Every structure is written in C-alpha cells, then in structure tokens.
Length: 174
Image (cartoon, rainbow, N blue to C red; front, side, top):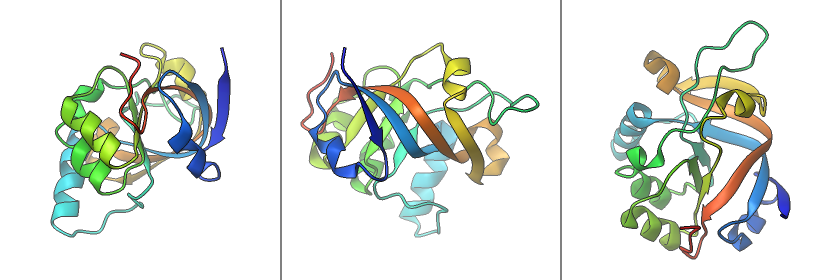
C-alpha cells in the first residue's frame, strides 16, 4: 500500500492529481466544523459578514472534539458523518473550499460540486478519535465559541491519515 505525505500549504497542486483510494498523510492547517457551525458560516458568508479564516483553498474537517484533558492539545477528535453537512457543502465548495474530511458517503449534489470546483472528499478513521487527536498539534477556536465542541477551530495536524474517497474528477472508492 502506497502512502503519500503531503503538506496542505506547500503541495497544493499535487492534490488535484490524487485518485480515489489513495492513502495520504496530511500536514498543515485544517478548519474543523460541524452542523451548527456550517449553518452559521453559510449564513455569514451569504450576508457578507466577516469570517475569521480564508475559505478559499481551505480543508474542512467534520469534527467536534471531546473536552481535552490536562496536557492535551484537544480531546478525542474523530470524524463526524459527512452527509450531515451535505446541504451546506456545495455552496462551500463553490466558495473555494478545496477538501472536506469526514466519514461516509456523500450526496450526488456534493459529488457534482467536487467535480465542478476541482475539490476532494477525504475520509478518515471512524472510531479512532483518541488516535487522531495525537495527530493534532495545535487547536484554537476561531469562530462561534458559544457552540462549544461545534465551534470552528483552526487545527495544525502532522501526518493526519486520510483516504481520497472522491477525487477531483468525481471518481469514488464506492
């Protein structure tokens, strides 16, 4: 099994060449957000409100962590079921999101948005939140702190394991 190591910021052009089924270890910055954060984010963008990160070329990880313990950057940080964000994803891909990360299949509308925008859908290991949290080296709430675990966070990850589930051509592992 081939595993490719990619830096989100430096290796940006290489992501377009990834095919469905490829294993990747990501290093770089991700945004984490779940249902309620997606709803607010889309509303804020549509209403021309300022958001605290660059949406263009961002990677959004569908995750809401458990509380961190002493000496931990973040608590358990496993993926959320991606289909819960399908009503927001096409709009966000159109706004420039490069990739989303979660678990499970996506709707036809999301697949079409991925193809239209040369995006990616990546999956990671469900049920392995404690393991994945060790790959997160920094975590900072940057928006919607009142949402607690569903707040938008800026994460810095090292060797974060993902599989290309849907590539930029719309081909999928399913």
